Length: 126
Length: 126
DNA sequence: TTGACATATTCCTATATGAGAATGTAATGT
DNA sequence: ACATTACATTCTCATATAGGAATATGTCAA
Image 1 (cartoon, helix red, strand yellow):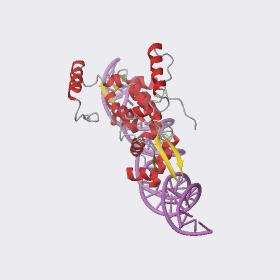
Image 2 (spheres, rainbow over the protein chains, first blue to last red; image 1 turned 90 degrees about the vertical axis):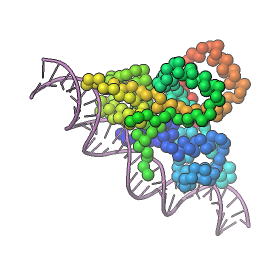
Image 3 (cartoon, protein in one colour; image 1 turned 45 degrees about the vertical axis):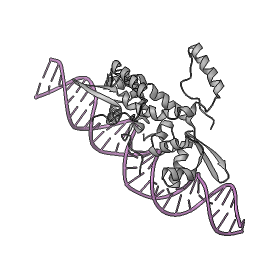
Image 4 (cartoon, rainbow over the protein chains, first blue to last red; image 1 turned 180 degrees about the horizontal axis):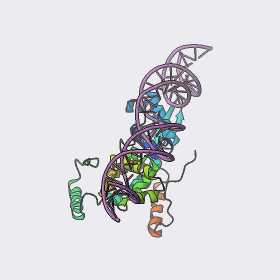
């Protein structure tokens, strides 16, 4: 069997980086395709195709307004992904730090208002 | 350009359902490949290949023990996915219910200890 | 050494991309 | 009616699977 279709579920649809970009962009509010094209920096047909995939799995909603189409992110469709990844939360909390150290880190965070916080988990050695 | 490799990042690796199954199974603790094969119900070579993908993106760790290899989920590698999906949280909270109704739902949840809670977001009309 | 067991890798093939180019379609203005 | 604007769709192609079958590698036991 080949790889599952990108339209088979939200997990597959979101695997493509440009589609994640589009979703992040469209969560702020409705935008027409031309705006997305300008914001993402991809040609119009490619954007339309990505929007087609997102539409098919329900990750975006469309509304027609004259000759424009207004897209917006359907955040609710992302929720299952958040919940699945969330089932691992209690495990990664115990991965790198001991309980005591995490408590200290928490206090730091509370007092220092968390500036320059790294966005992602640091890469691990291969 | 073709589709990005499954090994290009955690998003792509996790798009495959069997790999998600494997990750959920291996988060409990170390298991050897034979156990995974039995638990997942897929032939051994396929499981080995899925494990190879998960290894390459750092979603699992391996340890050799005699002729067995003990795999376990590296939950920390799932965290970036949880965080990305989490950026949409405040939007889906306002999708279906008004503030008042959500408050009521919250009280119900607190008093009733949440039995028979649905696992996923219900499907939407096509 | 030889054999058995546990995993990994290679080869094969049908299928599905994502981007680029070209074209189709619908709505609006004049 | 016609040109223009705003999107969507179709076609082509290089590339990457996922699974099945077969085979290779590595480790222990006798």
